Length: 314
Ligand SMILES: Cc1cc2nc3c(=O)[nH]c(=O)nc-3n(C[C@H](O)[C@H](O)[C@H](O)COP(=O)(O)OP(=O)(O)OC[C@H]3O[C@@H](n4cnc5c(N)ncnc54)[C@H](O)[C@@H]3O)c2cc1C
Image (cartoon, rainbow, N blue to C red):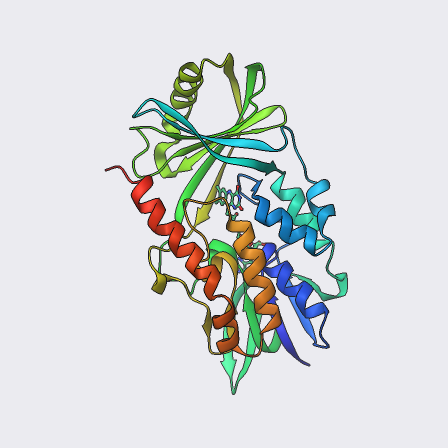
């Protein structure tokens, strides 16, 4: 049987596309590996919360909350020795749980556990190969995040360390600018009893040092006890409009696979949800999809240019 649509991926972009397809009479499937680890800061912006609430998906938020809640985000500039509030009311979640909750909203009959390794096209029909099996479809919504093989940009490696701490708990999210982190910043995110500390690439060897320097500068009585876990994740940062790829014949790209992310915002999840929903709505009309995503692209581009001015030290 040839399906109408196959969604590849199991993140927010894929799920919101699936939720939209559920409203239509289409034969579709969603394929993703069931046990994939999500490397993420797990911060939701007010816009993301609103988007989820408007679609009665608040359970995904409520069941994945971690402390502290409704945190503010401070930009700590250790180069200029300044601290400013950057954002208010960020919601703190466990990203793994959040994605699981999102996926619970999709009918189990639609889900296939698989990792796609090849897509071939014959006479307008796509044959998608996974784990020694295959499925055929007329349309594809491609939402594999930073694993996209279609985007020409090379994914960047991000590292996160999980620390156990001593002293009082941190109540805010901190983004830290420091000379040792070239071209990027370091984030310190409290998650219950531990801290996530992350940044781009090889800067991890300075993590402890910068965290200690940050707490000293802020006069916080918090000390690193031990490292619990290290993880690596990929991210693709578009640098200009042309790096955003929305469709290719009958394949629509959504979320990070389209390049809808920027290094300045913590809105990757929001961009994924919005673009995924639109991909589900216009799965068979690429031009309309492209038009409908336009305002999102403008937002991403605006953030990219702001980020270029703000975070880039050489
Ligand atoms: C370190 C880090 C911190 C971040 N912090 C935040 C934050 O705090 N807030 C925020 O909003 N955003 C954050 N982001 C960005 C955010 O994680 C992404 O923008 C968002 O996850 C994109 O959603 P997506 O659905 O496009 O892709 P993803 O969430 O990456 O989902 C991709 C899915 O595709 C599946 N997949 C991959 N390859 C295949 C394949 N070949 N076959 C089948 N399935 C496949 C994966 O298993 C996964 O289920 C962060 C990213 C990183 C790396």
